[in-house]
Length: 301
Image (cartoon, rainbow, N blue to C red):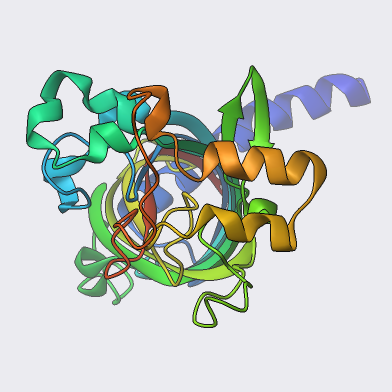
């Protein structure tokens, strides 16, 4: 018998049996080794809670103020390691965008207490890396080898992240960076309590999800993750209007011109508007946040 023929026979007889055994074992029981790994990607919808836009009232009233029309496409890649499927450590990089605008409130402007008339807007790209812990409660009862593994698993997650952002606004058809304009007097001697904000900061991601073991090697998850931020300047809006005469003491050229146009845009809607230093521009009592709804797909090995 030729060697090639013998090899073919052995392949047909042995490989399917091994594959079947692996399938049965991984589908019903744990892998022999208690540690497994997953690598995957997700597509997501990213949105935010800030001082701008929303739906009604005074803003940032959690789900009641979500404006889903502002949602932007986002995505991520991740790598996870699990102990008996129950406890996982995940490293993930997320890329997305957030935006909001007061003019989205036009249809309900009589209920917005001046938010529509404020007429501010922003958008910002988001780049984030996180390290998160996943807890799958249903898998704890399956610690003992030989116990059947549920194919559907709700879970909790939380950790620490590091993200970059850069709020911008559209002016005369161009996108203008807002942070260098110091629109609320950040860094001005006249406002010593208003420090320039950093465009790279830590956050605290937390959320919940549900995971489906589609096959022994592939999983699909749906997950909602919110980020707790330590800044109220995701949208470059936080506190009160400043005296516009101060901008010329700290800025010049195009930055001065842009700051005077973008710190108070009410005149675009009301030509008779007169700037009022000290008047509320944002709500400093609440920090901003952003969140994602993720559809995740991963390969188990």
